Image (spheres, rainbow, N blue to C red):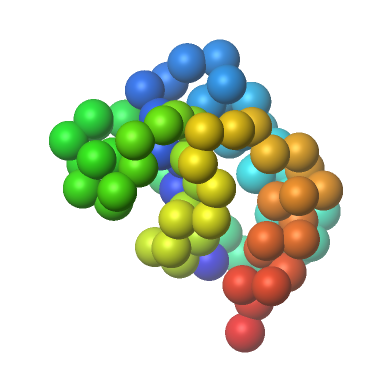
Length: 80
């Protein structure tokens, strides 16, 4: 499972990355956490507000810091 944090590296982006990592570890899933920091790459995804969270290439959240529980729910629904 590929988890992407789209943002410039601000404190909110870092918190979202930490919450995503905790959620993935809690679920015990194999994951790769990537940070997309280039504005051009972020905008290509249709994201105009950061931070954003994408799972397996699909943007799931834009403009807010999701809690660990919210990310756990998104990861669970993205599992095969």
